[in-house]
Length: 130
Image 1 (cartoon, rainbow, N blue to C red):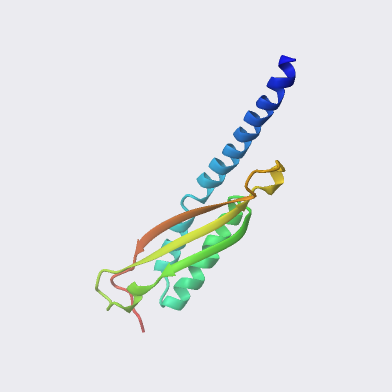
Image 2 (tube, rainbow, N blue to C red):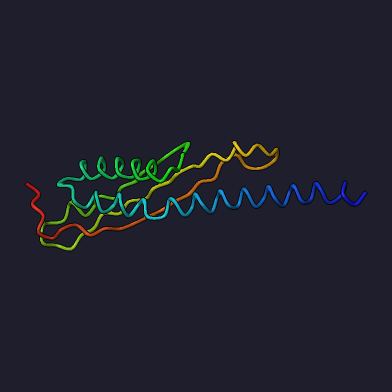
């Protein structure tokens, strides 16, 4: 009788541990992705190139960290490219990744988790905008 009561509780605890570990692992893997994208975007010569470089590097960094995102959004604030060369400016990149948890397969639990990472990287003050 006691086993019939404790077995479902033990299964639920084990399931929660697996879900918690998956979320923690995904959160750890997304850490730094925006920094890589921001650094690459800060090396670009224009705001359009910065957006393309940031998106490509964030996608590549997520793939290399074996993080399977159902939806990836990369937002790049390129307002610093408007400032004159020699002025202090920066580029800000925010990466949002929705991780699919449905493969765990426990009824009643959420099917995905949205993770975010943001980073700022300074633009080269000696950059040439021509």
